[in-house]
Image (cartoon, rainbow, N blue to C red; front, side):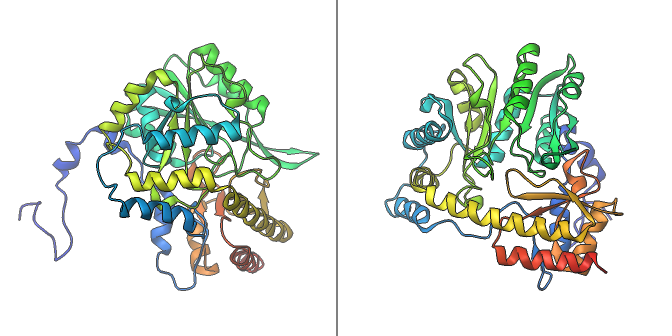
Length: 407
């Protein structure tokens, strides 16, 4: 029987020749360890899911209404590739308020979420045969996007250090980063506050990274999507606090986290205005722009959403403290209390295989977590727990974990 026929009623067989004829960049794109666990626990009765990076609140009504009004007005046609002028002006206002930037709208490009912004940034600066430094443990989509472009991710692991004033903390070894730079290096990816660790780079760490980029002529891809979700300051330190017009920095942003808009798929890429036509071309050949009603919702979020951001942050803080207190009291869990974002990255004493452990917690504790080995070097024996949910749900999940640890 030819291999292209079906083997059984619903089992299509892919000929080996099909895979063999694909581009190596496509084949190099890794499977997601987070999705693997999500699929493993999907549909489990009573499971408390802490594995996906999103909150449990729906998008606020005023944002949904702005999009609905746009649909009702018939705004359903092709739009500006770079984003509506009104959207880019709203982004510019927002960035001026919170980051003190004096960039005009020409520096901002509306994308289909932060993932699309990341893909465009990678296409701009790296390709086949290039190396890009990535701070790890880190969001696996960084390495995946680079692999799909034919570039290689060079991991720069964070250190977990004990500091008398603050206990365990993640820290960046700038000497290690410098030693990782070669003639093939084209860029540095920095995610701060970080997923999955909650590491929030100090201004000194950012200054050190920027100095390396300047000295070696490298681009920086700065994922600062959790910049407003910090617990000890109004926002996290940013490359905006240090950079000048000559620096090669591309910023990734999204509306997903601050305003509970994960399913809307809208974000933006910020870069030198002189790259505008190149970025527009890449948007044209990937998505041809973001739907106008989605952008109308984004404008409402940026201009009217501060009360909701504050509400979410208060919930995240309470959930973080509940989870950290419970796990610390168990005496079996090691972690650095996250300074930003909404993840706890924790290691359980005596458990080295994070994938096997995550599956056991689904089966035995009724809690879904993400395995640390999905996030690269430094995460192999850790688990990522997302606490972007109600304090009540977080308390129940913490109780289940503590009871499991006591078994």
